[in-house]
Length: 26
Image (cartoon, rainbow, N blue to C red):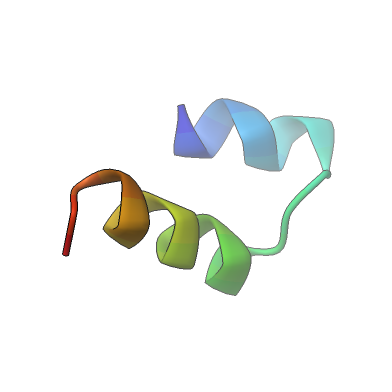
């Protein structure tokens, strides 16, 4: 999910990681 979003260029790597952490509920 994270990588496919990066491919679209909608998020930076830092934002991607942040979203991933929130998705996992920390």
